[in-house]
Length: 263
Image (tube, rainbow, N blue to C red; front, side, top):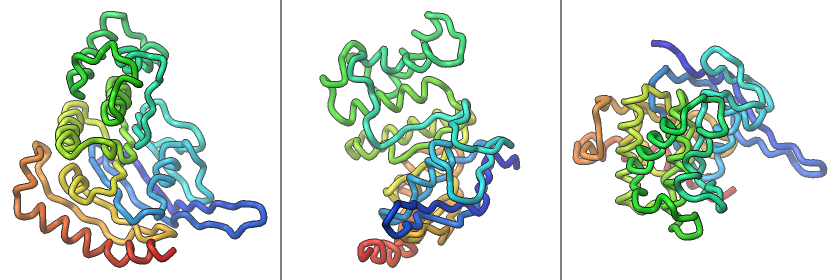
């Protein structure tokens, strides 16, 4: 097993002049193997998104370190990383096609116009936006705009995908379908994926392994290995072990969620 990510004693404390410090999370230590799909779940406010920001290089942790593919991550997003956030990040002045092509046209990859067009066309079909190629974000629903953001990241074929609630704006049916597309992309590309989600069902469906965080300051409270085969899809929700694993996660999280509500 090749370790692709190592998080070692990572902590984040927010300090503001004249106010008490806020200990967001940590210390946290865990690793992720190359090609693994790992989810992190936890109560609201436990530091999940802040942890992802520190792993990506968007934010510097207060202490500890992150090693990605053998290189220390320190305040800069590595080129092999693609990120998708919960918030719509489409460019309002660009069409769907040009939004998705943006990174290919302005990034480090030297691609011909024909190669860019082929990748973009495939991504449009993959996220179910065919027929809307020439629409602008203002002409789309919130869920469709989020699919544009997802496609813009997937088209770059990153080695690493860091996902922060990427499907939260989608309806349940589309959310399941996009989860299946993510699994297909993961299998085809061999990418390593770290997913933040509030949905226990989504975590169990998609993940090889699930890390459970406590209420703030977020610590690692539990780890669950799902044991699913790599060739999996939404049909696995009918497996009796699916409901059992969701229940295990909830039994771990119930008390933490109550603590978080009282903060």
